[in-house]
Image (cartoon, rainbow, N blue to C red):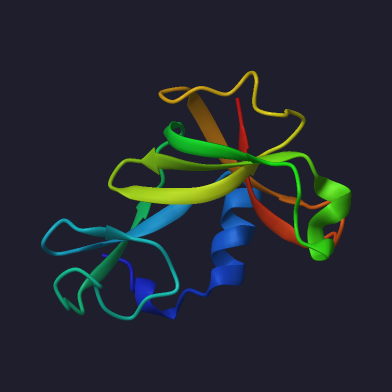
Length: 126
């Protein structure tokens, strides 16, 4: 069992970027994303690091055509939510205006810099 409670969001993004994504699972089988010290579903303090499945499935998405000024150089872009086992990730699907994205589509998760801020964000690739 790995002590998952010391992980940070930056460590999570680093892991996604290197292809070693993970989530936390409590002893009751609930999945959650870092950073966490307890399970938000049941309050369990026993968290284990579990490998994120290699692919996830898009459950919803939207195309952002008119973003806040902070992200104007990135538009249009697609924001999606995808399930990866027991957890859901929210990320960006780059290089599309939404016409090639579908609910149920398989995606992989990584971390890539945005055009506007150059900060890494969760990115889905088809």
